[in-house]
Length: 74
Image 1 (cartoon, helix red, strand yellow):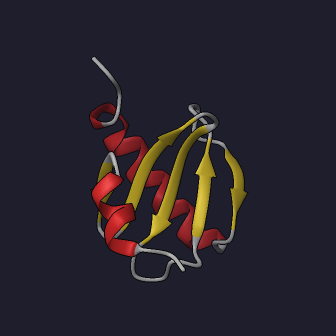
Image 2 (image 1 turned 30 degrees about the horizontal axis):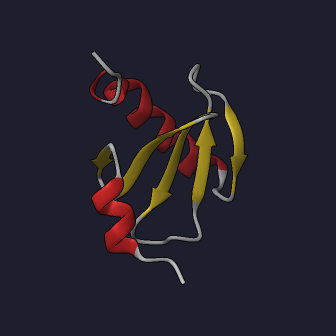
C-alpha cells in the first residue's frame, strides 16, 4: 500500500498536490490526491513513463519547468 504521507515527506518539492522527487532517470512525480496518477520525467522534461492523461501531463510539465530550479542542487 502506498503511504502518501511518507511520499510527501520525502519529496524534494510539492506543487499543487504533486510530489516531485529526484531519481536516477530524472524526476518521479506523484499526484498526492490520486496516487495512481504518476509520471517519470527526464532531466530535459521528456516523459519517460506515465499513468496520466495528456492534460495532466502538460500541467505537471508546466509545474516542472517553473519550479525545476528549486529542486536542483547547489
